Image 1 (cartoon, rainbow, N blue to C red):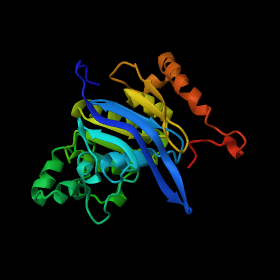
Image 2 (cartoon, rainbow, N blue to C red):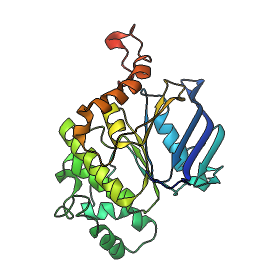
Image 3 (cartoon, one colour):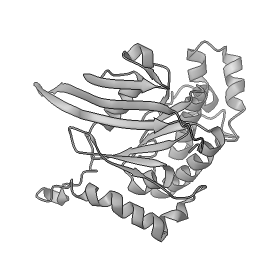
Length: 275
């Protein structure tokens, strides 16, 4: 995170409410969410499945509109979806790579959609393939890639849009445990190099604490921020940090309110992180 005394909020969410008609009934999804992400920070949002985390990112990205409340991006009030659309990079849960396009052409797609000529877009993507671990794989098609490689390609496509703020919706959720750890360390190195503001949704407590400057814990639906936890762990960080006493102490502070949301009358303990 930036050490500048005059840190500026890149995202400020105040009292955001959102509801949908579900099974014929109006149901509240977000219930007065407050959230602040300062410039250069890495912030994670964690909470039970269905608590509105993805809805919140969709609102920030300009893909959805709150029923009430305010959304500010870079200090300016963004009242409509059109005012927010295109102002953040957004990587959703699935990599959404097009199977008929090579890795290189997939990573350049966002630039092409913005009107950049195809040759120029490809050249810009080529400049970053090594940093993103894609060197030598540029001309393969998505079916030939591992899950981690596909996520790298999707992340490069997002980063090439050159937005100051990046929204990540469980980008590593479908990966095996070892690949996930590798991707977490890779993302830490990349974030430090590119100096972006990142908001991450995750179900993984260790991931949230390892990557973040601050973690927001949301309640079950209707979601609201039940806890804001600063993560005072030194940087740079590596995955072996998760076994240290300092990390375990911070994790305990997050797990206590998290476990309080489990309904133990349900089969399996009512795990709030179940699919």
